[in-house]
Structures are given as structure tokens and as C-alpha cells.
Picture (cartoon, rainbow over the protein chains, first blue to last red):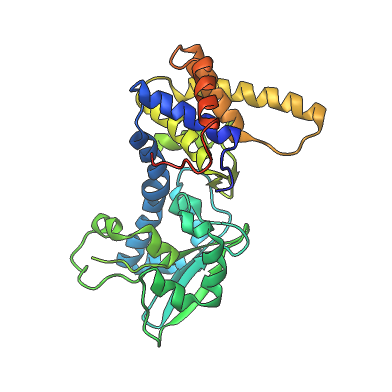
Amino acid sequence: MTDHDSPQKIRAEAIESLLIDKGLLSAADVDAVITTYTDRVGPMNGAQLVAKAWIDPKFKAQLLSDATSVVNAFGFEGGQVDKLVVKACSPQDHHVVVCTLCSCYPWAVLGLPPAWYKDPAYRSRIVQEPRLVLSEMGLSLPSETRIHVWDSSAEIRYLVLPERPAGSEGLSESELAALVSRDSMIGVARVMI
Amino acid sequence: MLEDFLILEGIGAPPMANGEIVFEAPWQSRAFGMAQALCQSGHFTWDEFRVYLIDGIARWDTKASSEDSTSYPYFEIFLDSLAQLLSDRMILLNQEVDERSEAFAARPHGHDHTH
């Protein structure tokens, strides 16, 4: 942590502990707000796009050809994306996203980036040894699957369209969206049923 | 759920980069989380908090232009604004915060604990 014992860190901690002592707040309440931004609201926007693309081939084609227009037409809160590119996974090709320079991330569709996304080790190693890094993160890909690593920048953001899981044929669009994890849209996990 | 995002636009919005909110340290997300949680539990409204935030930003702007500083410490202002609002509402006095901050600052190195 870069802010270890900075005056602001100590002050924020003091305020939180006092509010907890007074019963006005719990650490879980604060966690819940942060989680809302990191894991739920943001990624749900991306998950809606993925689920819709799975059931609607025309929408999928639009998403792959001009994701920026599609996403901006959805009017997600929290700002427009300048340029978004969607990459579809298949048994032959797997896509994974990184930002080697900093932590550029498609906030409007994925919420706040996970801590590991900003980690220097992920940012350098996913480029050098993607197959190994993905397997360490729990995603083992067959050797015949090509892995494409996409480097985000301030100008262009990537979203991965994961493969639709087998056995999900009977599910509705909203049921499908609920299956789509944030990590699967970064390309470091499969969608599991 | 969407009302959570109102704060991300307009005057007093946090630092954004291409639609992303930018936290540079964990305490910044804690401060953000505290303010939102207190709003959600009805201790104040976001608009009431934003008055303090805008005032703090304006004061910083005045000071910064005279000192020619370039950095924009949004979350420092955010934390100060939260503390001041809590003190004005008698929810948490500045003195209490100062005392606990001093106590925390005096902790031995490596005191790390879990929340």
C-alpha cells in the first residue's frame, strides 16, 4: 500500500472507527457500497450486453462491429465510453484484457477494476506468459486455443464476450446475464452454469 | 440502484478517467463508502454533502491558483468535507476525530489489523 500511515489514511480510519463505535455505520456497510461499485452495478451492464449477444445474433454482430455506438445507445450511467471494442471468445480463440501502462478499464460496462487488474505482476506477466497466468487464475485453456492479449489505453477499451456455457439453452436473457461474471468479461474466467 | 451514480456527474464529481472513478488508495474508497453509506441510512442527503464538497473545492481552487499547484486532491477535500459535515451536525466532532487520529498515529509500526 502506498498510503501506509498517511495522515489522510489515519484520519479516514479514525472517522470510520468512531462512526462504528457510535453505531452509525458498520464496516460491512462501507464494504457494501464499495462492492456495489466494484462487483455488481458496473459488471451488470456488461453482463446485459453479453447475454443479449448470446441470444440475438444481430445484436452480437452490431456489438462486434461497433461496440461504442451500441453501448452509448444503452445510456449506462457514469459516463460514456470513448471507444469500446468487443472481442468474442471461441474454442479457437481466447481473448484477455490488460492495461500494461496503468489500469485503463471499461468502467461504464464493468464498474471499478478489481485490485489484481492494477497489479504490476498481472500487467507484465499476462503479456509474457498469458497461458500460465490464466491457469494460475483458474482458467486452463487447451493448447490449441490461441490467446490474444488486448492492451487497453486511454483511447480504446476492450470487453471480452465469453463463450456461452453448454447447458444454458433454456435460460432467459436475465438468467443468462446473472451468470456472466466480471472476470469472464476481462477474459480471465469462463462463464459457468 | 441507479441513484448511486448521480454523484458521478456534475460539480463535485470524483476524478474520472474515460468514465471511470479513480481511487488512488484504499482510504479513498473507504471515505467514499462511508459518505454513501451514511446517505443511504438517512444521516444526510448527497446534495447536503455536496454543498460541503463544492465549498471545499472552491476554497482549494482559490488557494491553489495563488500557489500555482497542479495536483487536485479530490479525496482529501472529500474527507475534510465529510468530517466537517459530521461535526456541524454534531454526529462526530472534529475534536473526537483529531484525538482518535492522534491515537492511531501513535500505534507501533506493523499494527495492521482487520476491519
